[in-house]
Image (cartoon, rainbow, N blue to C red; front, top):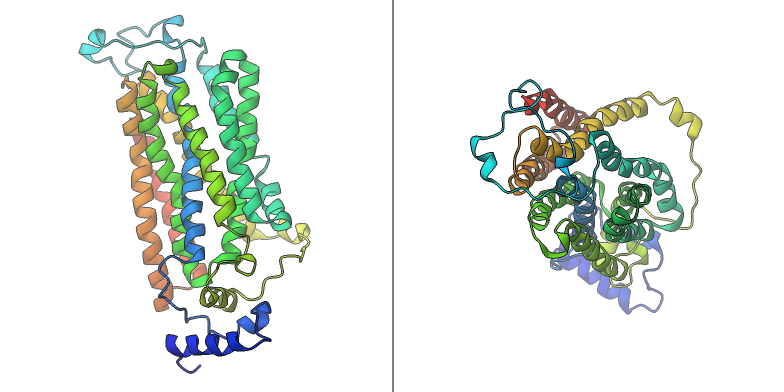
Amino acid sequence: MASINNEEIQDRFTESSESEDSNFEDEDELTHIIPPEIEDTRQCLKSRHILGILGFLGFANVYAMRVNLSVAIVAMVNKTAFPDVPDNDTFNHCPKPPDSQNVTHRDGEFIWDEATQGIVLGSFFYGYVLTQIPGGRFAELFGGKLVFGIGVLLTAIFTLLSPIAAHMNFTFFIIVRVLEGMGEGVTFPSMHAMLARWVPPLERSKFAAYVYAGANFGTVVSLPVSGWLCSLDFLGGWPLAFYLFGIIGIIWFVFWMFLVYDSPSSHPRICRQEQAYILASIGPQDEDEKTSIPWCNMLKCLPLWAILVTQCGQSWAFYTQLTELPTYMSEILHFDIQANAVLSALPYLTSWIFGIIISIFADWLLTKGYLTLSLSYKIFNSIGKFIPHRYFPLKTN
């Protein structure tokens, strides 16, 4: 293919725009204007970058709303209602620090034993698992923008209702947490659908890493902020962790609905060069086309089962740590709530940083031709799943 510079591309658009028949509504026509590897770079903030920024903030917020309970429950539970651990019980508990008697600990108002706390922390995932597959299908049928936005909005609403529900009734609180999980369950599959329409293949590793890194970023922010809010006296402390991130989620929803669109062809303000570049890289997109799901072929697909099994293992370790680590550090290691929250956030801080670094390195290997796309996925996913699980038991020793 002959080399085409940006000036020649701009001339083509200028000549085409002067023609009465050129309205750039024909996607097939757009794919021939700019070769996939060429894009005008003079526009600093492109439409897909806005999608990436708001997607990042959306995941940051839903994870903040997900993990705030892990810290808040430390302040919610009345620990003096249960027999204290004997001072000489060092087999299952670390000895309390010598100065622990001089530290004032504010007890919570809910008399929940450890089994009940496990139900509270796990109830979110009862709903979360139910909407994973339907969420992806809804995104295909109704558009990823609406499904992702509604998912975050519902999560925010039920987060705001959580303190009220907890004070009303334990069962009501569990129901609200399940509904919150159902709302958040559609976020990842709907974002997959959005990125498939918006991001050229050679950008996807890095772009997806940036967007999904919002989950770790939200966790890093939410844990220490929630710990600090729980230590305050205003409104009881711990409800503030739910109110703050719930309000942020509603504000985010407004920006998302006004600034993001389902595809480049439906965006009214997208730069023509960017639109042509995306369509030439990905191909024409028919938003009205409803594809059927090959269920039988999927069930017989061994690579799919391999991915499913490895993801289940990764999710077990990740979500066990996410939900139980603050409680473990409080009950077993006896950290106060603010130190507990900061230390609990450290694994997600390193995950966020290294996730971005590795994604840049992976894209560099792809563009240089050192790795194929399939081999890149296998290598980096294997590393990402093996190393954390290999050293997971060390955290408890």
